[in-house]
Length: 66
Image (cartoon, rainbow, N blue to C red; front, side, top):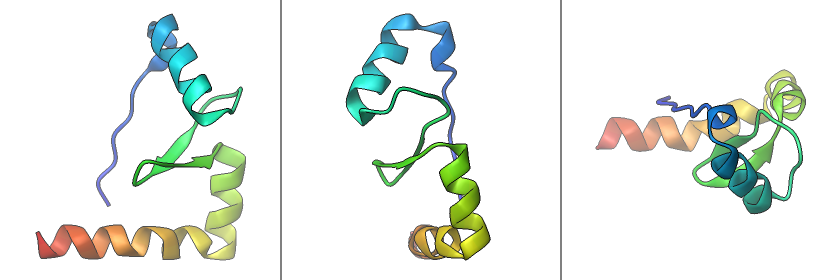
C-alpha cells in the first residue's frame, strides 16, 4: 500500500492546521483515504485486531487496478 508522510514539526502553521482539521491534539496522526483514523496506539490496536488490514484492503485493490 503506498504511503506518504510529512514532517509537520518543521512548520508550525501546518502543525496547527492539522490539529484543527482532525480535532486531535497529539501526533502522529494517521489518515486513510483522507479520513482521520487516530494515532499510533489506535493503529496498533487496529493491526492487532485485523481491522487495519481490512481498512487497507480496498486501497491495495484500487492500486492494482489503476
